[in-house]
Image (cartoon, rainbow, N blue to C red; front, side, top):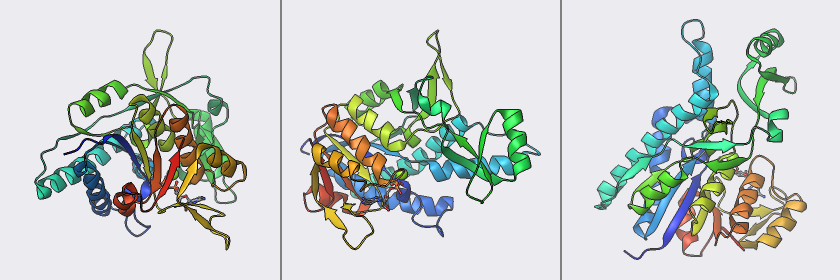
Length: 315
Ligand code: ADP
Ligand code: MG
C-alpha cells in the first residue's frame, strides 16, 4: 500500500445523526457505519487517519437524562458529559471500523483516546459565555440554579431560559503526543471528540476540567497542526462550500486560497456557528504550515480525494 501521509478527518453531526427522526443509539450506529466505510476507503488508499468528531447532541442527551434523574441520582458535570460521549462515540467508530476492516480483509487496529484540551483561564470567552446547553427552564428554576450552582442563564427569544457556557479557543491538546505515537504504530485513532474536554492549567502544573465547550473544528485544526498532518478534511452535511449560500446567486466553490477565503469571510459568505468556524479552523491549519484541506460530505470523500469534487482550500 502506497503511503499517503497523515490525515485528520473531522466528522460533523451528520456522521451520527442524519435527521431529526433518527437519533437513537442504533440510528447513530447506522450513520457511523456509513461514514466509517468512506473513511476506510481513505485508509485503503494509504492514509494514516485520525478521526475527530462533534458531540453537541450527545452531550445534550446525557445532560437531559441527568436533569430528569435529579431526584434520584447525582448530576453529571459538563466535562464528564464530554468524556462519556467521547467514550461512547469512540466505541461506535471502533466497532464500525473493525467490522469494515474485517469485511475487506484488512488488518488494522483502532483506538479511541479520551482527549483533554487546554484552554486559557484568561480566555475572554469566560467573561462572555455564549453557548446554550441543557434544557429550557422557567425563570424561577433558571434563577435558582444560577444562584445555587453559579450558572450563567439567559432568556432565549421567548422560548424560555437556558444555561450558557463559554466556548474558549483551544491552546494545547494534552494527548497529542499519545495520538502521534499510536499513529506511528499504524493504529487508526479516534480522538479530540467534541474538540476535547476543556481543562485549564493551574499554577502547579496540574489540570482541572472546566464547564465550557470547545468548537470541534478548532480542536481538530489544532490537532492537525500538532501532528503536522498532510491533509485536514472537514466532513459535514454539504458536498461543497458556497458563496451566497442559500440564495439565487449561490456559487459552489471547487477551490479557494487562504487569501480568497479571508476575503469571503469579510464579505460574510459563511454562517457563524456552522461554516465560518470550519473555514477559520482550516485557515489556522494552513497558516501554521498545513498543506491542503478539504470540505465535503462523507459520501464524496473518495471522489474529492481524486480531485473530482469537494471544496479544496490551499495556501
Ligand atoms: P457540522 O455538524 O458538520 O459541524 P454544521 O451544521 O455546524 O455541521 O455546519 C455545516 C452547515 O453549514 C452546512 O450543512 C450548511 O447548511 C451550512 N453553511 C453555512 N454557510 C455555508 C456556505 N457558505 N456554504 C455551504 N454551507 C454553508
Ligand atoms: Mg458544527
